[in-house]
Image 1 (cartoon, rainbow, N blue to C red):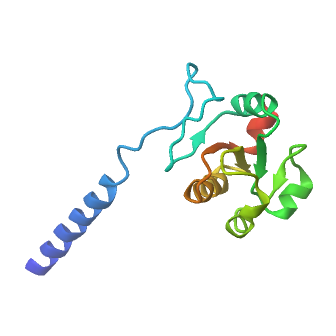
Image 2 (image 1 turned 90 degrees about the horizontal axis):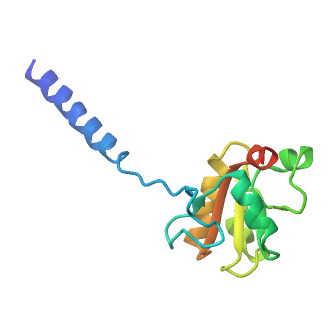
Length: 142
């Protein structure tokens, strides 16, 4: 009987410890007062932006890059004109295809998971102006 209580208490403590790591996350989305032309990210995070903000940032800068990190079939079916296609699973090995590390890079995928992974890869490799638009449909809706 005592063994059961120890196991239950241990499981509860482990759950509380794991869940406490999920709180306190900071939002790095732009607010209306923020200017997307100013890098908001630091060396550890990318900035999440809306489709409208991404469009404004892209159209206002000739050196900005739209990086589509979806798979080839998705890209072939539909993509944003002028975007560069590098699937997120290949990104780390193909970083040399991207310009200097200070270039504005707007990353997107289908639902936002892969773009977040890709943005992290870019930031971890020293890219300083990484913006995560998340979903390709965000671009279509602006």
